[in-house]
Length: 503
Image (cartoon, rainbow, N blue to C red; front, side, top):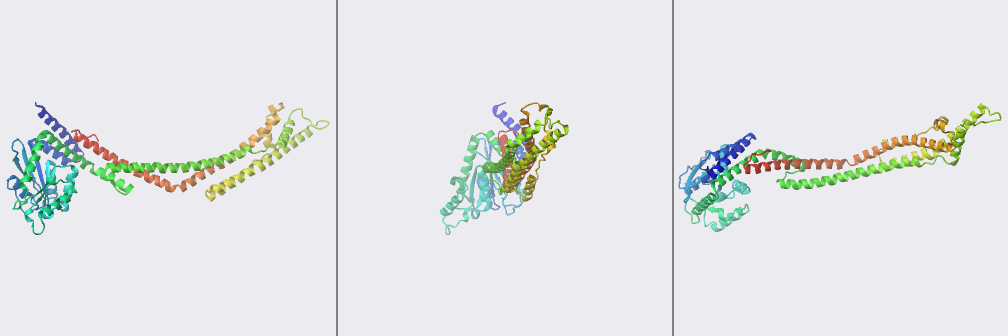
């Protein structure tokens, strides 16, 4: 088996598998078009030209004149047939096939389907415009589509026998056509002025020669490769048709999030880069503001706790009273001439009361009152909601440590009474116990204060959070759109290489 035949067979197997995939994803029309090309025994040796244009543009008469074969013509736009004419190419075994399609302005779905079935077979498209309707919207839209696809094409201004030189010099008319079509990327050497009637400007022979030259060039490139390109084009159209609804849905989501739909994946990527940068900026701003509030609230909390830690509630005089109390608890301590038990216990109680009263007053004057004042001041300055502010101030004012005889007695460690240094350690233990109790009460208020400050920040940053949500939605929509576009591109690359897409 020759290499060419093996290549043809392998290409057939590849695109049969792709056709099956297209059928499975709902692009059955394109699957059948692939199979039609594969079933055409003359596909490798035929250069197909599809003639498209408005109804009554003169397509049939033009094809008849080019081929020398009489085609059906008439005023009935309802016939949904594509008539084909084949011509042998001189000097080769190839053929030139002309396809006459229904009018592109028809509203009949059968006509549209027939035209599309012709276009997918075409190696070249000739857009035929009546002399009087060169700039018809349908013609220019069709032209734009084919130029975007990179389709080989020619533009024919037909029935120029209608031109009246007395009204407008033909040269000026031709220049105006060149100018209009140049905006669509159509070169002058692919624009022809024709008629089947009489006109000194008729380029019918030039059009025929151009088509034959295109066909010969096409055949020189290799028949199998030309068919492969045609198959790839149809397969890619099928992929695009399959992804169209997905792309449209993703684009609609982008339009909802961003206000408009991107024109391309590149534009969507540019938008995503911009929106992602804005999202990062807004998030940093939000997090910095929130962190600043948390840091400030925590600093205030620490200042309250530090006020407690640094409170001087046991100066020398107070410490001495504590020392005297501890010394009265030692076994050898006796009071009175006869060292009566009653007098000894009374002295112990008196010393305990003196110490408790002294340190209790100092706790109130040098710890609790300053703490309540500081908390009330900080709460007011923080600007939190009035109800919470009042509750915290009231809570600070209500902090109470009942330093009485029982309180100071519970802190005594009987086993340590024998130590000469214990009286001073005992006073430190009492101070530590008082501050621990104060820290517990103030700590609960401090946590409430921090929570209130964070809540205030959250309320103030509601607009920023909404902006973050908006930017997040935009980024998510754009990323989803790009993901669909990427899947489509991978599928396009796969079918162009003759492989079944895996997406």
